[in-house]
Each structure stands twice: as C-alpha cells, then as structure tokens.
Amino acid sequence: MDAPPSAPAFGAAPGDPVSETLELTDVRCALSRGLTAAGTWSLAFPAPGRLRIQAVLRGAVWLTVQGAGQPVRLEAGELAVLAGDRAYALASDPAVPAIDALPLLRASTAPFLHAGESGRDTVTIGGELELDTAAKDLLLGALPPVLHVGAATADAATACWLMEQTLRELSSDRPGASFAAGHFAPLLLLQVLRAFLSDADAGPCPPGRMRALADERIAPALRLMHSDPARPWTLAELARAAAMSRTSFAKRFKDVAGVPPLAYLRRWRMHRAEHALRRADTPLAAIAASLGYGSESAFSNAFKRTTGLSPRRYRETVRSA
Image (cartoon, rainbow, N blue to C red):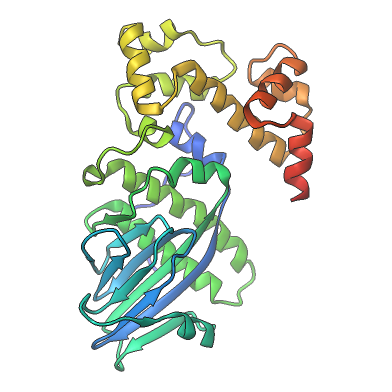
C-alpha cells in the first residue's frame, strides 16, 4: 500500500488550538465495513448514532440522507461525513427502491458486503467514529447532516487512505491490529475537522468552539489562551493580540464562540482539567497550579461550578465507568 497522499501532521505546535483541542478528545473506530456493488442496487441503513464517514474507492455511489435535501453523488476519491442522527441509503441510482441492509450486515462478518449483480464496479468503505463527550461537544452540534468532501481536496485523499488502512487492520489477524486501528481513528477525526473548517459551502455553523476555531480574526487570541491557559489573560491583552478594540473584540468573540473571551478561557481550563483527571493520577494541587489557580480549593470550586462535581468525585466517576 502506498503512503498517504497527504500525511497528517503529528504533534501539536504550541498554541495550535485545533491540535490542542483534539488532544483532549477520545475517539475510536467503532465499525468499518466495505461494500462492493455492480448493476442496479440500493441499500437502506438506519441512523448509525455515531459520526459516519463514507468513502468511495472505485466507481460512484448515490447517498441519500433522510431529511437532508437532494441525494449526493460520490465519485471515486470522494467522501461524505454524516452527523449520524438520520437514516440513509446508498444506491447505484437514487430512484431505485432500497432494501433493508441490516439482514445483509447480520448475515456476514466479512469485511466486504456485496450488492447488485456480480462484479466490483463500485467499492466503498464506511466507518463510524465513537466520540467522547469532548469530541461530541466540538463536532456534532456544528456539522451539517451531510458534509461532501471532493476528491480534489487533500482531506479526502488522506481520509480515504486512512479508512482503507483501518479496514485492512480490523479485518486482519496481524499482531497489533486493534492498536493500529485505534490510532487511525483520531487522524480520521482530524481530517473531518479540517474538511469542515475549509468547506466554504458548509455555511456558517452555530456559535461555539468549531466556529471559533475557524474564525481568523480571533485566532491570535485563541492561540494565546490555548498556549498558556495558566496566565491571567485580560480582555485588553487578548483584544490587542487580535488587533481590535476591546469592545469590537468582545462582541466578535461572543458572536462566534457563543461565550465571552474570559468565559471561554475558564471553560478551556476545565477541559484540560477533565482530561488530566481522566488520564493520570496527577495531584489536584499540581493540576490547579498548571491552570493558574492559586490554591487547590479555588480550583475545586471552579471545577464544581462548571461540571457539577468536585475534581475528586469526577475522577472517581469517570474511572469507574
């Protein structure tokens, strides 16, 4: 297998809000199946309940998502991202009546299913990403029902390669297959995020972190807050970084992020705290100091106001789940 056409960057540059945000998320590939098809065919699938990526490796597929407007034609090298809350169909032609795909899925555990006549005129791969709360908060409220990523984009080429590798690993008995597939999942999520942020046709998303990450005017201020969350940033400092007046900056920031700048900073600190509490046995005093709190009690009070749980209780709850 050739190397990916456009390899994703590894490691977070200091102050890169996208990388730092993704480092606080947990994601795994919950399912990856392939479909070969020829002739006339149409398969109906229930709402997956997870973020779904459908990539076409050969031929073309028509994708129809319930309540999402006109069918979308996916050519070889293209992919679609589905928010996961709607039923959908894949077909050779959207006019062909669809049959239920679930009996086919249940009847075989093979990595590839087949539809229609004999032959492999069409080859498509579907993968579902299971997101943790942080990743859901970032993506699902902002994504349209269907995001079509064209073959000319580096994001599509890389995502198709990653999905093909994920399917190869999950369908093999090679040592370390699950480990490898698990590491492809966050890279797939990165490609979804990049595709969304660069898609001019997606339209403005609701105020929130996704829209903030895509906004070039507040980007300098975001980089400062992400690179040094412990610093007691002032509105004046952040506005100066964005080359705006305090009033204009505060309005712009709230319009795109949904919250004022300093509220965003507090929430970012709490995201980092939640990640630390889930992942390590770092003492609470050390977490507090790393986030700019003068005492463990000040940190605990701020954490409980945000999450409804004390840091100790939060750590016990997530680790026992």
